[in-house]
Image (cartoon, rainbow, N blue to C red; front, top):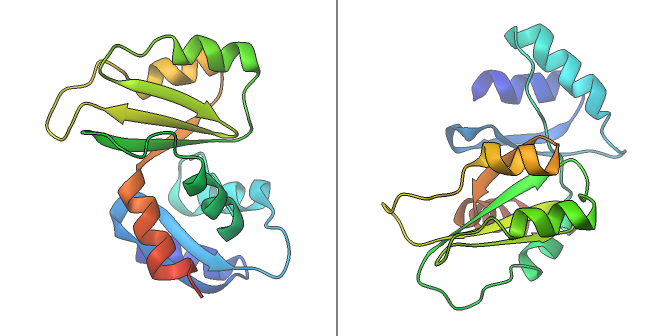
Length: 154
């Protein structure tokens, strides 16, 4: 994670922080980050390509307002997409949920309600990527909330 933070500093970003060992990088930028450049520098530095998904603090706030379940007995995960999927793909993905699990596509995110911690899931991220025909990166909603609280609240 230290090397990952250094990579973002080397790309010219300010106030770079990393959060837990899962590739979460938080940084400030005066302009819109060049995603292609970040991916290229990442691959050159680490020797492999990685999907990188960027969200602004405003987008994180909006995402948290769109969580479809306010009362539940499970664990919510959110998958970040590069762009919103076509509506027919979103509906096809949502139809794959096996109760009590639930899937909801909203904007450029997929919300997934699992039955609970330690409970095996019937849904795989690879299934979502195949149906939506795009890459994604999944995080626990609790991690997204902690990043917002620790780094994005002013």
